Length: 257
Image (cartoon, rainbow, N blue to C red):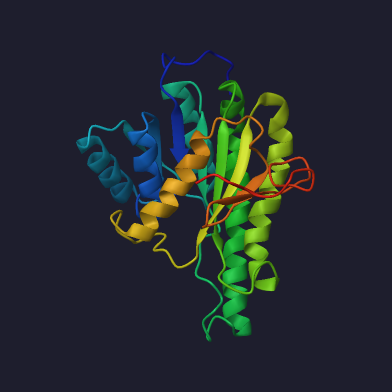
């Protein structure tokens, strides 16, 4: 990527939301746009992405569809080039990854059911790395970028074998937070209720809107020390390292909502 300056957006923050053509991703995109940001709506399906763009623009919001197929690395690279060419930088990256149902159901508790959920979520973690690596130079250029990785919080049992996909996202969040510290790039995770309609739900769904609001509050948080954390559906933010808010060096978890 070139090192040319930002393309005429001195006051408007620029955001990219992956898988933002429906459900939770689009709800997050809408809230970021309503907060005054230019939002790139990442979508694999062109028609769905263009529809989301039209609907958001009809509300007077600055939304732009960007083709983004997480299974095709070339589209990720082209998305980074498009954002750079049209906006010159990126201030916010929201990775919609690791979203799945919980493992409470009988069928999902079978070996095959567990394997399917596990493999799907670990593949999403690979997607997270691909997108984040492509967008990191643009985030560095912003002089204070934010990355929020959205994953599922499993109902029960917490943080054991069935929580492994969430743990994969949290582990990557911690690694990227360590990388981003020197450039002021803040990296955090949000673990939403696993029962919300992640991909096909209406934006009017109450649980979906609450999950979107939780994600956006973390994006808008001004505390420069708020990095390397994971926030659960209840809004409690816990550190992923001893130096993060809620970590071992702090008094305890903090609440961001």
